[in-house]
Length: 239
Ligand SMILES: NC(=O)c1ccc[n+]([C@@H]2O[C@H](COP(=O)([O-])OP(=O)(O)OC[C@H]3O[C@@H](n4cnc5c(N)ncnc54)[C@H](OP(=O)(O)O)[C@@H]3O)[C@@H](O)[C@H]2O)c1
Image (cartoon, rainbow, N blue to C red; front, side, top):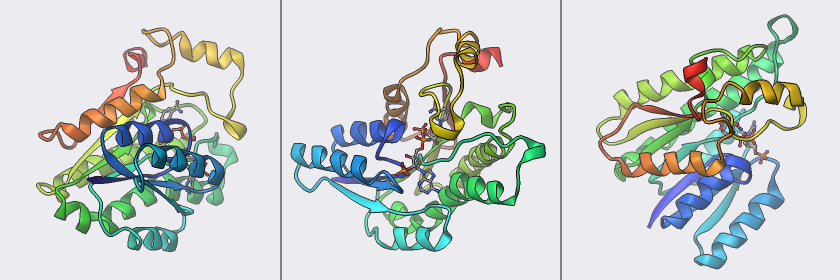
């Protein structure tokens, strides 16, 4: 049995990646921060399908010590999916060091150090790291400077680690376009949604399944490393 750790794996896109990998015989370690109930009910559902196939780990990923504790708790791993991320506007003139640390540490520091800390077991198992990037790693989303910078860093991290951790570990990425509308502090209005949809050649948002399927494709494509696949309905053609 292969084992996958999915960060932010309790809800939205992360939960779909968790379920897709589980359906392809992965045992899953579902990381969550606040979504305790969703994580528990997902693990219960998966353990009913296959006993002892899903466990939970809780961690605040912007905290380097928590990353160490999380990594130390994992003895065997075949696949690390760096999915967790934080997203909210940070207009350049109206942002501070606190936003910088929160976003950069969660979106960029955590995937880097989890990759480093877990590289020994991934290497032993000829494993794989998949980073969930964003099409805005290439072209910026207005008023989201720190998020853009964090995802551009994840893109370069994917390429850098692919070179450095080869041949034992493959490192790839999936860059979603518009999949699920942001929630809470990052919510957008109907006009903004319409504006985004109007620029997507396939004329609709993608689904979490679209992202999970691309992750799955990369896990089985054993001659691909260092590549980031856009899953965006053609959105980058109009950027
Ligand atoms: N949604 C889209 O359309 C879209 C578009 C482009 C790229 N993406 C990328 O796709 C991935 C998934 O997107 P999503 O919209 O499903 O993500 P999301 O719901 O915004 O966040 C995923 C999870 O990240 C966890 N998280 C956030 N900050 C954390 C922290 N400091 N420490 C630990 N966990 C933290 C949260 O876990 P808890 O709930 O347990 O706190 C959250 O459920 C992300 O990498 C995102 O950047 C998404």
